[in-house]
Image 1: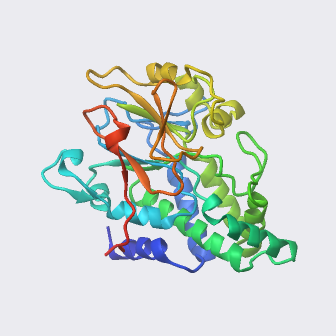
Image 2: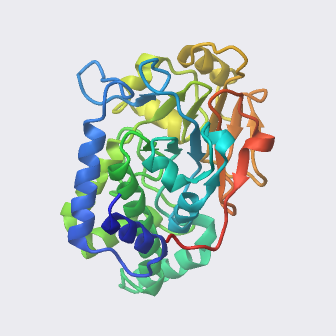
Length: 349
């Protein structure tokens, strides 16, 4: 990678200024284009010859790589910065020395799957959202609270887009329920609000601060994101599957309300029992010595993980921590040893 790329990801990981209109438009447009033309070897085309909703890394024509699963990011660019600096063991990488995550990406040694939910700081900045809503009610769309929220959200968004553009075969983002910058009600999308009127406040901020062009191209990026990733030893989606979806449903699910909702919005204890084991059988070819697992985020957990569906589903989103899941090439995923906290206080060199 060139020096400009390193400078950009350094700045995005620690910046306290809002990204520029022209930069964000060009980056979002480029990233959407990459997503819309992904290789059919790992992203099979739908029946209408469009990009499908499935990332399929079980394809025997593809090189098998160890994989990092990153839970909900929610405006935490510092999480991605720490991830890029995190040192992976030689054992995990199946090579003769340890490497940082960034170095391993550059050398095609790993894949990364982010489960989505890029915007909205949520509980981490609940008081800031309440303050931002008061600013909105007084007629100020870009007050200090909302500005800080959008600085963090857009820096994270730009950072993951930079990584997708730099490593299109190795860095992947799945659609979460927060990928709805226009706050619309459409297949799989609902207007979002929790502590304030977050979804509508973000939409207004974007349209006033950046204009319809940037907002629309980010929306195109969001709607081009895949819904599920199948790896040799695991399945990953944003949320626990509401029911058992078959392969063709996922591939053809990019505009299917039921599929999108069922992979991005499922509440705790709302999934059909047995949906996970059925999907593991449907999507993953048997591999000797490997016990397959299904990983997701969406609903918070209090510790490192929570098991559902008799242990076949592993929920890994603790919003107070910077946890990642390490999927080794040739062994079963063990949540007790293979989920690690990467929080650190260093800056990319």
